[in-house]
Image 1 (tube, each protein chain N blue to C red):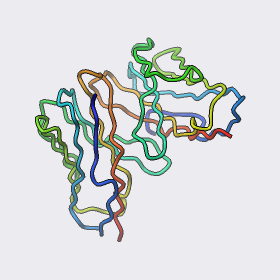
Image 2: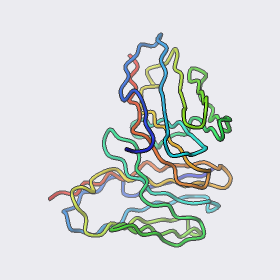
Image 3: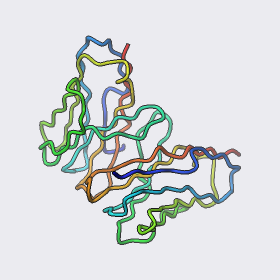
Image 4: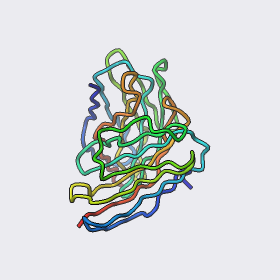
Amino acid sequence: ETGVTQTPRHLVMGMTNKKSLKCEQHLGHNAMYWYKQSAKKPLELMFVYSLEERVENNSVPSRFSPECPNSSHLFLHLHTLQPEDSALYLCASSQGADQPQHFGDGTRLSIL
Amino acid sequence: KQEVTQIPAALSVPEGENLVLNCSFTDSAIYNLQWFRQDPGKGLTSLLLIQSSQREQTSGRLNASLDKSSGRSTLYIAASQPGDSATYLCAVNGVSTDKLIFGTGTRLQVFP
């Protein structure tokens, strides 16, 4: 039990599909994050939510749309994705910006 | 702009060896530095977090040091085991960016 659960674990979709990634944390944290991990690249921060308010949008294309309905849940809505969006998408949570981040196992996304 | 570099990119050692993984960063104004482990197809597991005011942290066979003025951290693994095989990531939480900046990792293989 990692404390941070991501679903689905794997997702294959066409470029015209719409899907959503889900993240749930059971740690009582007040900040949640979406990261993208591509091959041979460092993890890239996409979005940060603190107390359910978005505080960081790291110049991510609008085809990625985050949603944080409460402090325990975070979604990433996907539409009209490109092949270069294929990657491992990781969710994390923390008690604050200076506290350790705890990660889920990620969603492996493949765009056909 | 904060940049994080990890050397070596890959390392293969026989079990029982003591080894050192290196991390360097360009901006010394940091809140903390965190070492993670990532197994194939999995998320990140936090190993150690060193606050900017600390010099080192220890957990079992792992010891992480921080020299903020020179922009360096090392992760020391004592008596390595095959179960230590994974990718090790270093991440810096910078004062100016207030977010984690990751290195590209060191891929470690410990063979019996």
